Length: 233
Length: 233
DNA sequence: CCAAAAGTGTTCTTTATACACCCATGT
DNA sequence: ACATGGGTGTATAAAGAACACTTTTGG
Image (tube, rainbow over all chains, first blue to last red; front, top):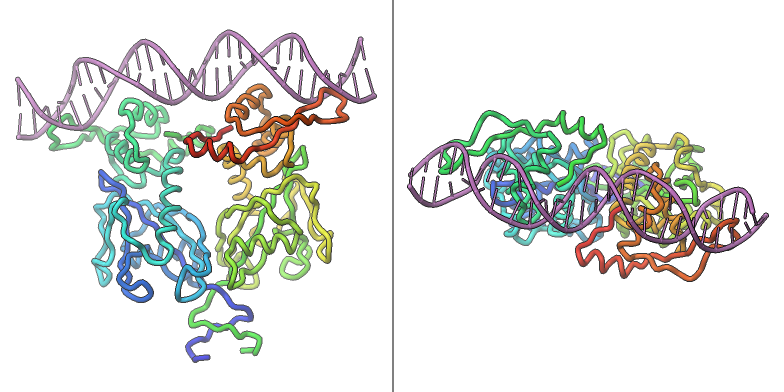
């Protein structure tokens, strides 16, 4: 037993990590933020940001810390996805990973300054490469969750800038659900909840009629929830 | 460092456990199966069955093993619920728990023979005592999940015997959703999916008209899912 | 024949879907 | 003035909600 193995337990323990599946939207497609692994195993392959859970942080705090360290992103929407525990999922030894999924507001906030610059990169969701570990499996679960959840929780707004137009929102839904939606019906459905605040601001420099900006009103949404109404697209 | 602490790592690791929230239905109420803790911490208090994850089992396998060991139940519906990682959730030290929820077919299969007999006990869902660890918090999450999921996945059948009557099924839904449902509309909704097989068998010895037994047909449900239809109550 | 719960249809209201024209803006 | 996408209303179809009487069984 080497002297740098100084944390000892009566029974063996799996290592515990978190991984973050990070979704973004560039106005046209759903994107995924990946990190090029700098070390073995899977050196050079793409993977989700993540790492080992520390003793004084919750798994969510760990996910947020790793996210910030590896991509520069903070204050994003983050939700626990699923815990993956296949015995052979990490060649370094038994590792259980609590996966989270993150939604980040627009891809403008591109990763990052510092040492890790260039290691993080956005990929279109239909051009995601072979990933390290069981990350392709995790991605499949994350996509399924995103597609299910976006229909009955207003999480789509987390992928758009603070101010957005209805056509932008519709494009987002169409990209995630992979089906075209009727413009008028989409509008009606969204508007009937009264959770968008139309702003006076309009698009500028378009070669066509300018769309109006809106803002998601979280308070109105909360009021809706408390009245027992459910958001649904 | 004592000689029985023989598993050593470079970095400290949290302990990893699973816990099982077990729901049953006695024909009237939703019930919860709890274990009286035989050892500290929380000795004598009620808790979910659960225990430490071994190196050669997935968390689901661990949950199933603990379930069998502590309650005698096997082959039950089991689904990952959520992973709880609050730093102070276990007074023995940092412990992360992957919680599962189980649905067991009727409470007839009462726990168990052997050493642990009598330690396990069903509680009506509205008479659940103060629980050990953060298990009250876990229960709240489990109930929320159950109430949400039962509306769009046919998991209710997992709480009933193989053969059941429509009034039984309706009572189950009413107990879980905590609201009365219209008999005729409930029937229509369920029947339109064509996932129940009416049997020739009827109730016996009732002081009123006997209800017909039905069986859930998993194949028909799968066919439904593949056609893109979704179950919904 | 009475009590008690099972079984069944129809009407009405609400919600979802399908669909076409005018409007604002930049070039 | 034209090309481009933004914004709007209505008619029809489908789904959900409300509701009352007849049937079967045991006592």
